[in-house]
Length: 401
Ligand SMILES: [Fe+2]
Ligand SMILES: [Fe+2]
Image 1 (cartoon, rainbow, N blue to C red):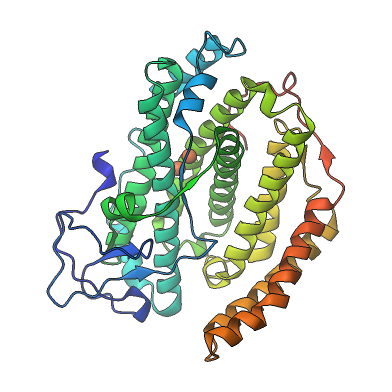
Image 2 (cartoon, rainbow, N blue to C red; image 1 turned 60 degrees about the vertical axis):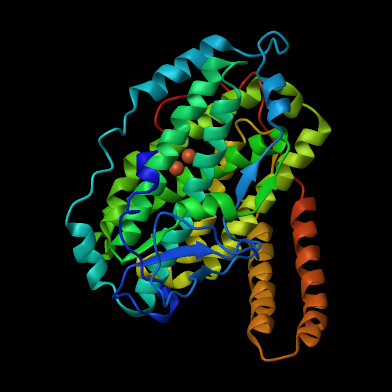
């Protein structure tokens, strides 16, 4: 928990990181609500301007769920599928805390940050902000699940608490990274002020499993690429990704075990439809997001679309071990559809940035949004791959490389 507010003792001066002013410390907030921000431990200067990150459908979200239903699902007296031995083994794995001493910074960070300039510097800051928000989102959800499940299933509850420990570390490390750029995400403010998206437990399982596994594949792919091409290693945080991503892999494996204990979420036609739906939304969100940020990926020597397709294909193969159906992402038609969505999304974004009246903008958007929806629907309806098996998808705690 202490890591969540790593630099709350600095006096921030609100600036605008997007305008390239990095000489003073700034605290970043997100435009989550229209309500004024509550006071926090950090005191902005009198001339403070609220520094706001633009939010959109593609911004990392915070989640909440039906905790009462969660309690029922993890009650060993009600649910006889809960394999407590397996959860005990997982708990030991989390208690081992492989990365306890991993996240230690050195002076390379600040030196590397000072060398980053111009648009690459801005895009790096955005990468750190978004990653920190996503990690922090996991921390909040797991922490609450750990708290709420304590009485019903102490073993599962403790695993959630230990996963929130990992996510706090990750978010804290990224926020420390922002301090190299004289910035800090105001996580206390985010916790209170941001909107939370409600998902029923079943959907939390699908969405969180996918986000952990996709996180794993993103981190390990970047790590391997930079190891092979050290000339692009422009900021040391990537050197930490090898061990870091194993945390995400373990988190994903825990969700895999949770879903096995809830076979009703995996073994009927509805589960197949939802599995495909969540795969599609997670893959499309990442693809559209990353294609808006090609400067970042090119800055570290990656081709954005190739990187994303690699991550999507690997995540999909991993997911096929547990989900009852996945998308046929290796069919070239799937990528063609993603690329068309990128083109449409770019046109939608261009309208938003134009000087047209709001009404005109909205009218211009209608056919484009319709085209985007039709591409999404077409991708969803592509013949899927029947996959997974509650019986066959054994828990595999070993490293995946
Ligand atoms: Fe994480
Ligand atoms: Fe995670």
